[in-house]
Length: 243
Ligand SMILES: C[S@@+](CC[C@H](N)C(=O)[O-])C[C@H]1O[C@@H](n2cnc3c(N)ncnc32)[C@H](O)[C@@H]1O
Image 1 (spheres, rainbow, N blue to C red):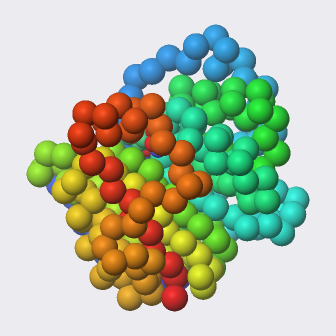
Image 2: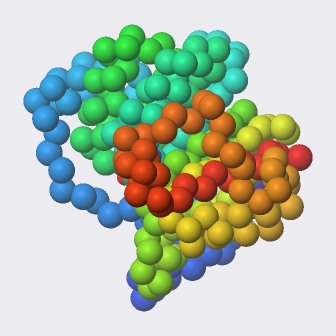
C-alpha cells in the first residue's frame, strides 16, 4: 500500500487520522440505516449484482479487466438511489462508471435502473468507499471522481464523519491519473467551504475555477436540487484536477 494516511478508530471509539494498517477500523461516514428493499428492488438486486457487482476484497483490482475495455474510468462515492449515477452513465457510453453505495435499498434501486436502461458501463460496489479506495483501487487508475451531496453531518460533533477531509482526499487524489478530475457538490454551505478548503490544501490538486465552479452539463439537476433552488437554497460545485 502507498504510505498515505488511513482513518482509524482510537481506543475510545473516536476516530483519528494517522498512517494506517490494514484491518484497523476507521470512522464511518455513514450509519447503517434500516431500510427495506421493495420487491422489485430485491428482484433486480438478485438478478444484477452477480453480473455487475464488484465485491469488496482487500487486494488491488484491474478496472479495465472488470469492464472488459480500456475506456475512461470514473468513480462515484455515495450513489444514493442511483438516479444521477444512471443518467450520467446513460449519457456517456464512452466512459465506465464504478458506483459505491452502502445503503442496500439504494443498491437495489440502481440495479433496477441498470437493468431497465440496459447500461453496460456501470458497476456497483456495495461497501465502504474508504476501504474500497484504500484497498482495491491502484494509484493513478481513475480519470474522474464524483462525490455528489455527501452526507453533511451538520452537527459540529459529527463533522468528523464527513467524507471530504484531508487524509481521505489525499488518498483519493493518489488514485487519480494526472489530469483526472475530482468533482464534489453539496447544498450545505459550510460543507461547500470545507470542500474548497480541503481540496485547495491538497498539493496534487489544482482548482479548475476561481473558487466554486459552475455546474457542468454532465451533472443533471436532481428533483431535490430543483426544489431547493426554487426555494432559493444554494448548491455548490467544486471541481479540481490532478496536476
Ligand atoms: C446524502 S446521500 C446522496 C446520494 C446521491 N449522491 C444524491 O445526490 O442523491 C449520501 C449517500 O452516500 C452514502 N455513503 C456515505 N458514506 C459512504 C461510504 N463511506 N461508502 C459508500 N457510500 C457512502 C450514503 O449511504 C448515502 O446514500
